Amino acid sequence: MKTFPNDFLWGGAVAANQVEGAYLEDGKGLSTSDVQPQGVFGQVVERVAGDSGIKDVAIDFYHRYPEDIKLFAEMGFSCLRVSIAWTRIFPNGDEQQPNEAGLAFYDTLFDELAAHNITPLVTLSHYEMPWGLVQQYGGWGSRQVIGFFERYARTVFTRYQHKVKLWLTFNEINMSLHAPMTGVGLPETSSKAQVYQAIHHQLVASALAVKACHEIVADGKIGNMLLGGLVYPLTCKPDDVLEALQENRAWQFFGDVQCRGAYPGYMLRFFRDNGIQLEVTDADREALKSTIDFISFSYYMTGCVTTDEALNQQARANILNMVPNPHLASSEWGWQIDPVGLRNLLNVLWDRYQKPLFIVENGLGAKDKPDTEGVVQDDYRISYLNDHLVQVREAIDDGVEVMGYTSWGPIDLVSASKAELSKRYGFIYVDRDDSGAGTLARSRKKSFYWYQEVIATNGASL
Ligand code: BG6
Image 1: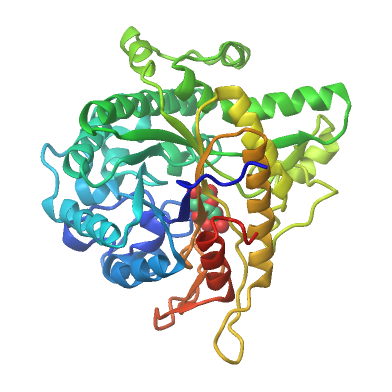
Image 2 (image 1 turned 60 degrees about the horizontal axis):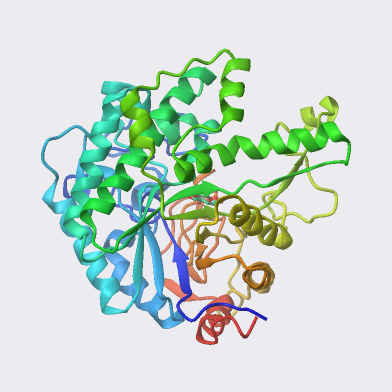
């Protein structure tokens, strides 16, 4: 039986806006995340000096990262996925020169990781962009933003070329279809045509970043990042099967462009059927030819689709409009738990692209309660993660090439969808609640020791 390779990267994943806090410190500008204090589906609010949202401090990683990295090292991490807050480097987004204090912060962060032999995997844009670019240019709706992003990408590739070899472009790039403000800086009321045009600009920017990374970072590798939203047909009715094919293509389209360098035929039909005329220049077509080295994705759940309208109406409450699968249990937030789905997804992506895969998010959000000794006995999290990792091992045995696994939120952090701290993912508990009360002290949960063992045995303890 084939199992985890010796150079498999084990670790966790966080995002700047969900952990760092320090939202205006050292010259940082406001980002789209800062003006959406209620999360990625929340309203945009005007920030007033002195007001506060939970993300403004988050878990104070900006000041406490040495302590956190020490704990990650104690678990045996060989990799940590972080993101750079674009607004620390270019506060408004359109400056000619970067903000040195922002660049210096990530230098010290990467040095700290190196001191603990932890490989950084860095996302250029995780659910945030400079708010200045939204206000002054209309977000990714404007072509000009491509150039601003390329300048940002080239700046960080140049600065960190010796410290960071693994990069990702846009977090869950397909989420722009569901949360346009977070994804592409467009109002929720935008038309499909506007959203796809903005996505097109982002795909071109992603490809230009790939090109820049290859030019600047010797031995660098750069991937995309998809929300792996695998859906199943609710029934074996051929119409349901076709519906599932189309729903899966709605997200696979991003991977197809990023891996193959051109728009697939089914999307050209989709645009025609929906009366969408994209502005695509020859230079865009040329740019898209710079394709990624590996595919990364998040995986939390699967769902079902059907052409049955009555059932679809009930599903509208769910973020991905998926009909619940009657064979699966759900998390406290209604996310359906499907470990075998991860094996399916890994095989689907491998068969489709034949490029190495990296699972850069997976985990269980739950309301943890410390026991009388102050320890969180999170057996539910251990069993979720264990079951998923067993399926990763199965996929490796199926012949799928998997580079690594970074669980989501190895330390409790602010949730993206609802900006809650009570939705906890960590192996490390953080003493802070949804109102912002708490000491921010860190403590090890039961799962901390479980993951430590998994890493120490390279998965043999699963
Ligand atoms: C992914 C995002 O969608 O899922 C993360 O990339 C996010 O930013 C994670 O935190 C879990 O979602 P949530 O809403 O539970 O935080």
